[in-house]
Length: 395
Image 1 (cartoon, rainbow, N blue to C red):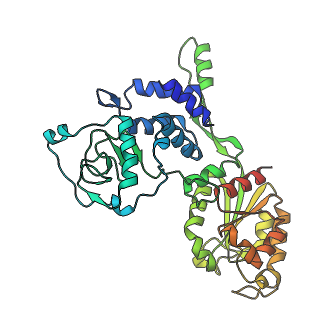
Image 2: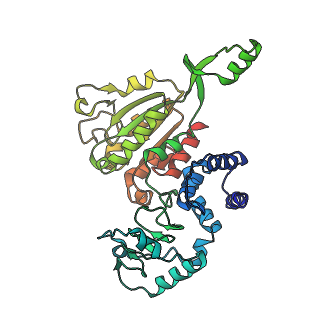
Image 3: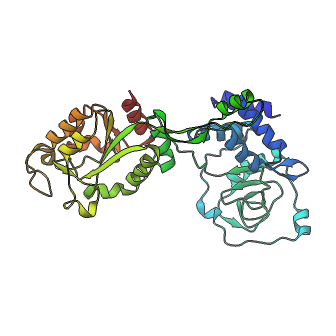
């Protein structure tokens, strides 16, 4: 049976290998998914196991969900599961406790009858129901809804309790993973990994399995353990982050990016600026005027092999970029554009990550000016934007 499931996933353009398929079979044989009845394992449990074993990248989760639904009785073809069900219908107020005799008296529908009945309910139902045995609702014995009990139904919303649903109709957690989505730290890490150049350095702390096997075999079977230094991303990154003012709207997203960058890059240096770079930057916002780092010193300190990444919304008065004294905080002797140009010359591999929605860029004169200075190397803080910027920096 599962060989056809494997081919269904491949037909859906999912990069599933034979090795992963065999791992799934081994997991089933080992009882990772326990049986819920004499009929076999729970479909919900199998779904989560299969997705964990077979899908290597979160961006494929939506494809997997569709292929899974299409294979197991073609659920999405039977009823229009894109139809919105009012949230009020699925708000649970009560929770009934049924006796074993009451549970045994509830009839179990087969698959075709279940899907056909659900289709009718979607067409007929006009209001919320609770504690019943027929309509889509909560807390009852109906095969449609959640929070109640049915030996074989379709769970709609809510959380699994009895694990007896043959189909779960719920919003997929990764359904909206596309180029325009705001990112979590884990997804940012995945995008940043396009900018990788591994090297082994430091103390020998990691087991070299291949060399250990060879050495042990050559040593007449006596264990000869070989260690090697851990692999680290050898890319050097200089991160300059805008802080304060209009950037307050983007604090959470920039913090997620900063967290991901710190975990992905061993060679990371970072500094803060406000709106535009001038003659100094800082590392501690509370002591930004007491602990200044001259921009000239930063340019001289780091070699050209550092990748330079600006993070900022580039939203300010154009005078802050183009005019001496244009800074909102002090009387800068040289225009911000001069300092930007010097940084770009010192670090040829550079990019600007902008958390501001790309749709508003055309209405911000300052963004257009900075884009021109950077040679259009500005990217939005989206999955696609990060991947494109990392690809550019890796060249």
